[in-house]
Length: 122
Image (tube, rainbow, N blue to C red; front, top):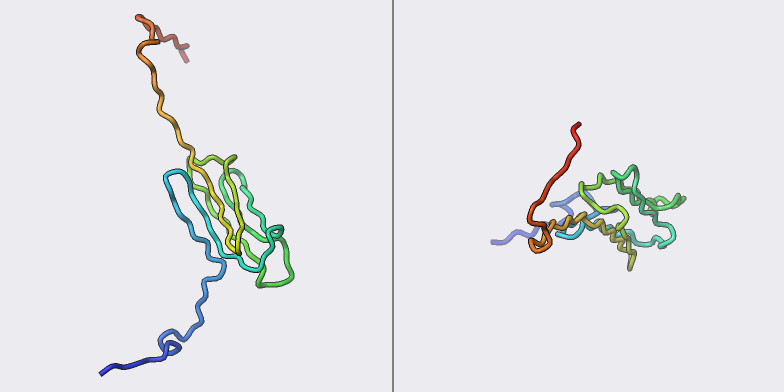
């Protein structure tokens, strides 16, 4: 015997994840994406505050459904100057590149036979 229960009884509240920002991490970057339909590209602002926070917001609007503001603490070791944003089909994607340190490679052929290291005393 099978019971069918209407979904409005199982979930009596209309739960909508509006203004939800999804964070994805890749080896090269952090990507923040948000569905912000109905907003013009010119109304969006992506800002970095104190080199610590990423702020995604819309310009002041009188329409409540067009207001959007989220603030995130940026992860460590990122390249602030490389942050980029793209808005297409109502989806904003902000890419925050990681600061990738290259390993130091010393070619043994160019190192002198005798190497002296000089340092000043503190």
